[in-house]
Image (cartoon, rainbow, N blue to C red):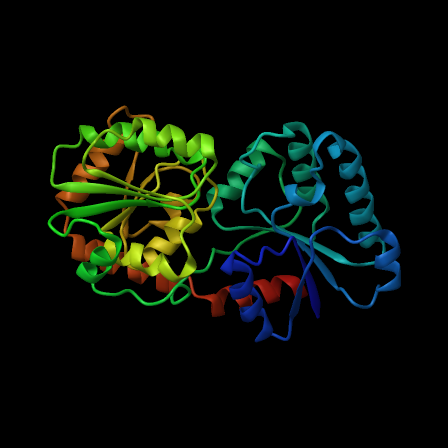
Length: 339
């Protein structure tokens, strides 16, 4: 059986890990940048058995010509269905975070929800949200997002990591890590953190647009906030996750958080709002949830972390990450493909 991932983002280890787990079940995966043309599908009708969407907006968006690209992709998907090909969609995001084409985003995601042989959600909450914001999928399964254990190198001694990064050794360290985008709430974190009265520092590590980074720099007056703005090479990721005591993900909205999963994969407790799939991810421990509608919710969560048993939280995070094993995820996905 051969599956075409659409699109296949090589920089995201999720695709490699999923592909490797599917190999064990006799499934070969290929990557594509767009949905193949009708002529290609006809010519290679025996090459691909399944077309699997992951981030569909990258397939149909085309600036002012999105409407045309939308119609072309829809026609190709329907033609593939007529030929007996299966269509799947992993709903990483209910709707794209960038609101460049909101109507076509909603329409295409509704189309996939109805036409797909199966829609994969990483949490039950994501399915319930899709039913409200899109439409009820014809067929769905809940398969968790796998862990990132071992992907970026082993965890090393905390003092060694901090020395490499030039970070203070004498206090606890919270970290935000990842691409800095408006929906991730980094500005809110920087604004709220100084209200915490305790022995913790905050590290912001990641790149983003020039405008976003400039705004962060302009608003970071607290001496206990350390900025490492810019692209973090893969070879240095383990240093950051070894240096930190906890990961903060102050998102305004989220479906699935790869950063949070990376955090628990390194044994870092996660401080997160109780939205999207985060409560299910941290069910049973491994982090601290807060109500994002409470004005003091984030600061209170930081205080609770400061007064917690950090060793126990770390153990819970590691235990949770182990349940997100790729062997089980590959087996579930392969079974869904063949159903």
